[in-house]
Image 1 (tube, one colour):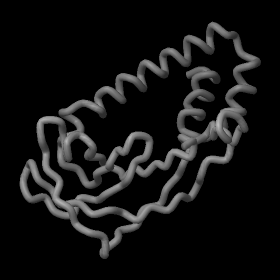
Image 2: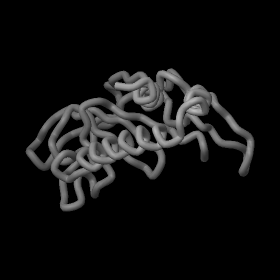
Image 3: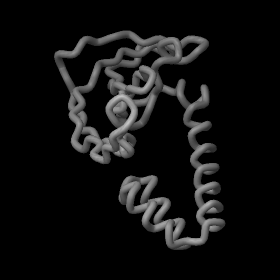
Length: 158
């Protein structure tokens, strides 16, 4: 694996900042950068398509996320009623690492590292338990996705 591929992987895993990535690729051959980024994005796209597939998202897993346009809320599966019905409960999520790279512009500005958020999750015994059903569009009319790890995301750009 080349240094360029390693740096791009670090960028995708949030080990380095966007600014560090831009500073690094300024010294690299443009064709090589283009090739590495294209290959990486194709691999990520294949993985994303599989994870978004009906077959993957309808399997019952430990966690569920509610996708609300650009925000995502984390839930845990409390009880499996049947293969098409589960009971879920909202997790308490605390943002450990919010975005920091702010650039003024637009209405007020833009966070370049909005995707670099880190969250901690705790079970909330007092949260309401909701039944979630699997239909033709997926869990909860396609708004919920079953996952192995809880995911929470707040879009600071709105």
